[in-house]
Length: 371
Image (cartoon, rainbow, N blue to C red):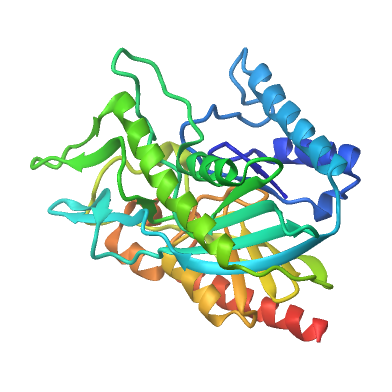
């Protein structure tokens, strides 16, 4: 499993990254999982034939970093023990806010928020942590769109990167921290450097505090990473004799969506145009009593929470932006609100609920087969 600090990763780049892992670590592409941390403040690398001139070096830099990380992982392979912990970190807020002109991006303290933090600890036989994996329903967009006061974009691993740095600094040495973005399609950091506003006349805008946003990154990163450390200190690791990875898919109904017609502000009506069937890839893995669910679409937080609640495994991680990206898969209520996620979704109303039910059935099949 590799986590890359990018907003999303193009399919051809994922294939190239899996080829690197196959060459360096001997991991077959089907057994490799590439996840984007979903930071909005890292250089975006377009797919083949779409990259602007002169940006090839950025892609090569990402791939070189992955190769180096894989070589380090192979060089330090050793027997390991696993443990899981779950807690709460209130670093997120529902970003769908109702205005007089309709629903738009913002912060709704009364909206559904999933503060659950899942934490997987991997120890060497000496009891020292080799890796800490964090799973939380929050997008890393504290600095999304923020610029320096003097002009120019700011680059950062954002909330995911700050939380990982906090964990690694606490343990030091060889411990690696990974952040898996959960069902965060409607979940933003509770504080943002460049926040959305809707004016009285209905026009939308943003207010930027520029470099001051790095204070927010450190603050929320310390809060999220600190809770991960607290959980890790309480977890007892043990040998996990079973590991299985499955690749499945769920068939749903799509909507006609054009990236050129992205939402630009609140509305009180919208026409959803149904399209044909769509296959949604699902990655399933179980490590003993720990289950991992990975999908490409950005699920609503309530959908991720439902999957966890109904999973037959006592501990379940729900991750998005896994092996690619596929825009939003919001809950049914979002379509009636005409909010940002619903108008930017390639999936028909009710798809998220249907897919969640199918995923739980697949988890049940996997557990029954193991027994």
